[in-house]
Image (cartoon, rainbow, N blue to C red; front, side, top):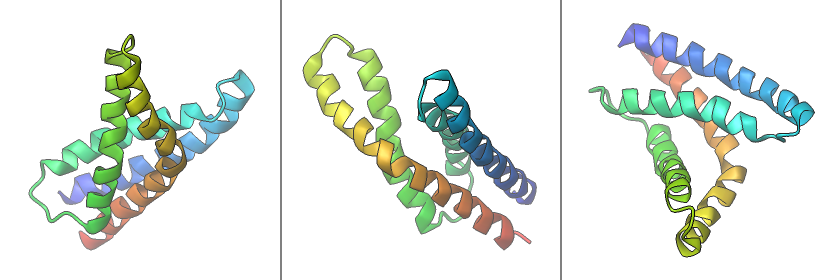
Length: 122
């Protein structure tokens, strides 16, 4: 667990930095800031699931992150899966639009939480 916490923190930290760089690259390529959400979000989701199945005590920050980020990924899958049903995609689309604003804050919160877990393992 100690090694995972250390590796997880450093990986998440450097991926957050890469996400910030991806904003610049995305703006140059015409994608806007949306590369950031995938560059940072997918590794954080993987880390979240790995940590979910570990038998350690979960912090309040971890629980808040999961409570707000899981609907985003579920909504993304629903929009892709029900592409032809406007009622479904409109409902889940509101969640995705809201997440554009709060996801960067959750990304920082998650990196901070991995830092706190890493420091508590020492």
